[in-house]
Length: 284
Image: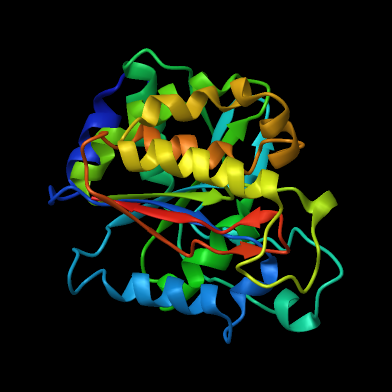
């Protein structure tokens, strides 16, 4: 049973130690095979994760928004042990054998839901059993934090809502960064599986894929983060870059949680199959 006031939420958020503001990540996750060692993306995620606890403070909690959990309304995983979901097919058994035995944080999920409700945003439901961590989350977090010792909560996306609603929700989550929460969006700036050419080198992409990737990259470099939510106004270019745009939406959750003047850097700026942009961003 949920508390009838926001006292619990305030106490639980306050229980997370104040810290220097955590960075925000947007990670292009691409093929599930990137979760296995021996490829450039896996190695780059591992290198990035090694910066936490050395150059950057270690997160106390990770809030991940994956392209692969679409729901009616918004939901947070609220179980103590989220299961590893293998939401793909046709890959080697080695990939299906992967597990990420990280803990969840049901109390923090409830607190975040209460905090958002208090601020007047739409409520976030609590999922105690149905979901877990899909490959959009664990495929990038496992290489980054292989010890699985940082609790993870996943936030779903209501695909029926317009892009500006996703961006607005992210802005309500921004303050969590001051409490040691690492916000991670996992998707792809360009994602068109229908046009994918397997075996294409990373420096090769369709002209439309390059144009969309460079346009969005320009907004990011300029700190013009509000423009990201207007991507559908790019018309046919947006439609071919994203026949369905669930892989783009996690970028809005990352960008909505930062300030336009925060320092940022790109990495993994190559393509997979000519039609999947792996461009990734670190802010802060």
